[in-house]
Image 1 (spheres, one colour):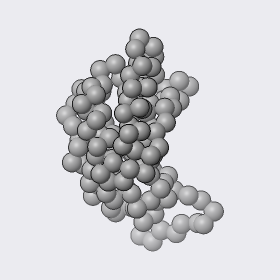
Image 2 (cartoon, rainbow, N blue to C red):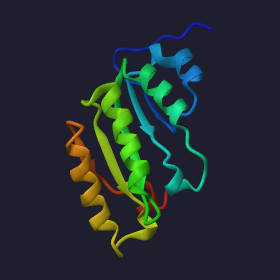
Image 3 (cartoon, rainbow, N blue to C red):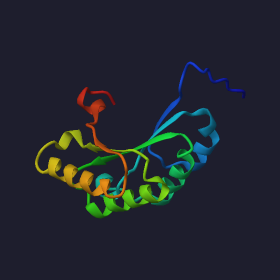
Length: 139
């Protein structure tokens, strides 16, 4: 079906970054891609490394930023692998670290600062921004 994009609007995709083939189908209609990297030690699930890498390869054609939720359980080895993947694809992709809103305090702040410092050795832009949707109760 034909799709018409108005110059007055920009299309934004918020995604878990695990479906690179689906992204290929819609990438031409997008302006901004916000992709989450799901770390195994944070989610308790297996890694999506290959899918994430393929997805980033397609998404980097547009304005792109990446988010990673940091939990008490997040292991630095997982985080390091994600940062290395990003830096190989493009060190200028902005990275947003998001503290798990339900685990505030108890060493999480220190972990975030450590991870940010590590990231800035490999990436150009790193920020720490809370998960606002959880703070205000939006799912």
